[in-house]
Amino acid sequence: MSDPTPQIDKSKILGAGFRGRCPECLEGPLFDGYLKFAHECQSCGFDYHSNDVADGPAVFVILLASILVVPLALAFQIKMDASIYLTMIIFIPAIIGVCLALLRPFRGLMFALQIMNNASEGELVTDPENYDEN
Ligand SMILES: [Zn+2]
Image 1 (cartoon, helix red, strand yellow):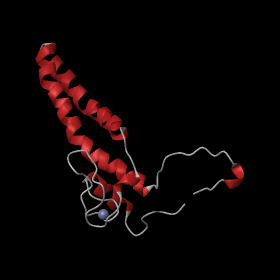
Image 2 (cartoon, rainbow, N blue to C red):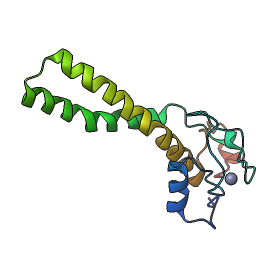
Image 3 (cartoon, rainbow, N blue to C red):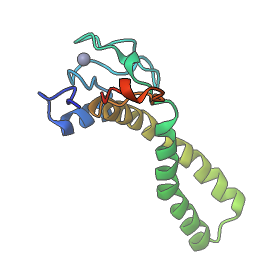
Image 4 (cartoon, rainbow, N blue to C red):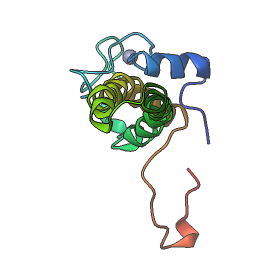
C-alpha cells in the first residue's frame, strides 16, 4: 500500500487537520461552517467527500471532556460542600463548552488520519481469486 501523501510530513498533516486545514496542501479551509466539511479544498481542489468521519470524533471528545470536567465537578462539590443543583448549573455548561471546543479540532484530526492512512470503507471479499490487496 502506498502512502497517499509521501511528500508531506505526517505530523504536519495531523496538525493541519487539527487546525481545520486541508490535509493535502495544509492551507485550504477544511470546514464550511462550524462542523460541516467543505465540498473541496479552495487551495488545491482536493475532494473532501472521499472520506467520512461520521460520529467517530464525538466518542473521543466525550471521553476526553469527561476526564477533564467530571473530576473538577466532584472536587468542587466535595470541597465547597455545594448542592448537586449548583454543581450541575456550573458543570453541565462547562462540559458542553469543552465538547464544543474540542469537536471541531478532533473532527479535522480524524479526517486527516483517514487521509494519511488511506482509510476507506470495508469491503467483503466474495471471490478470493480476484482479491486485490489495495
Ligand atoms: Zn488543499
